[in-house]
Picture 1: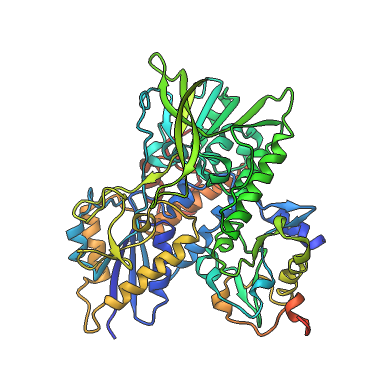
Picture 2: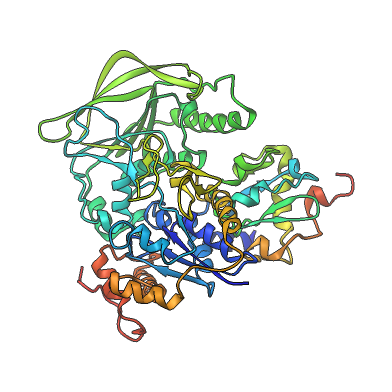
Amino acid sequence: MESSRARSKAAPGRTVLKGVVVAYIVTGGCMDVLDRACIKVCPVDCIYEGGRMMYVNVDECIDCGACEPACPAEAIYFEEDLPEELRAFSDATRDFFTGLGSPGGARKLGKQSHDAGPAASRNA
Amino acid sequence: MTSSRIAIIGAGPAGFYAAEHLLASTRIVDVDMFDRVPTPWGLVRAGVAPDHPKIKSVSDQFAEIAAHPRYRFFGNVEIGRTVDRDALLARYDAVLYAIGARAERLLGIEGEDLAGSLGASDFVAWYNGHPDLASLEPDLSGTNAIVVGNGNVALDVARILLLPQHILERTDMADHALAALARSTIRHVTILGRRGAAQAAFTTSELREIIGIEDLSVTIQGDDLVAPADLSPMELRRVQRNLAVLEQARGAALADSPRSLAFRFLRAPTAIRGDGRVQEVEVGVNRLEPGEPGEPSVRAVDTGIRETLSADLVIRAVGYRGCALPGVPFDETSGTIPHLAGAVLSGEREFVAGWIKRGPSGIIGTNRACAVETAETLLASLSPSGSRAVPARAIEDWLAGSCPDHIDDSGWSCIDRHERSMGQACTRPRVKLVTVQDMVAVARRQGAAAAPYSNPTGP
């Protein structure tokens, strides 16, 4: 949790729960759908495309909520409202960026071939 | 391929997202962005609440777009006042209006113009240091404030009135507003919604924020907090979340709290009364009925029952409204510029994006998709054979003659550095300059990085 705590200090105004900065989270409804409507409305271009689904970069997200109603699969939740059975996507969105860090724009980076969390598991 | 030169009027989110898309095109496009105030970023600077720094950080994106070598900014230039539409059309291949919706909707009731009754757009612009409203001086010497409306702006306004000073003083709120709110004796805020809690437009995060203010007692009246049965699953999710937050708040009213917030649903002001200034608000009690075709699904109907609330300050937050530009088509009913996919109907190489295109709703990100549509239409309309625009230098010469006090990129960068540096001294994101005169003075210190930063006209 140490790095999350450091992040929460660095980002005034963020919602922080138990020391972790929360953000909007893309969940399983996106898996193998990849509609991408979310990226058209994201004001900071922080929703990245993985192999099978989209991932929000929680460090870059400004919690504006534009993506949530834009998603035709209703796959995006504010982390605080994430149903218990979708909690795995909370870790997944952070794990996805291990090695990528904060690229500062999804369009610059382009589609990635990897996934994290449930979408990375063979049985999903 | 020849390059084309586009003028974007309005340096807010819609303008920047349009600029971004135009500059990223395979066609070579130069973008000159104009704003009537000396500073860019529109409502991100002058609308987004100062205690929302994360949302305000979207300006980093705009700064990145502005760093493009084919982008230029010209602030303190007002179309229709210092420069007219024909002069722009004579110099540019296309003109894109992204001027937002700066007027406000009125309640249309008796006493609306009494002292102590004001619009949220003015109040918000005042606390955010917009130069037009820096001298508003709202009277905060009473105890009871009534905020009319159930959107995020209403919650912003109520929250600003209720937040403890130690939170406000860490923000980039205008100094005049910080001082006035420190002296404010407003302790009780009532938020009126003409329909029920389920119909309220505010977002759950804004609702949580205001209810979570320390030592605030919250009461909820006029609604049983039950979600209607006929909502779409997505809408139901949002409404249930709002209702759950309100339900939780209802159970947590504090006995002797210094500050209180009351949500009163199914209540609409019918008159504002007072001897020379606001003293009370007459409120009509509504009931809900299914809407007529073409209306929202649920509408408020007056029951005829009246209540009277004591009030020292009334702030209406019932929506913004677009203003016409001289010579540009305008739909008075909707307060927007009529268009087809962003091209102004019966316009001449004119385009429109953002609130003035689709009406004043949606959040910052909504403007991205809206502006991209317009930019695509604009790009497709450009003549492949050649540009009719005048050279970059000719624009500068023209502006030097017609608006000598305009602010260019380096001028804005002086203002920006000055404000941030002033902020650094008191651990705030920035200390805003709030008059055009001060902004112009600071901008003129081109390259004067070594000069000590100080407020040009003193405190």
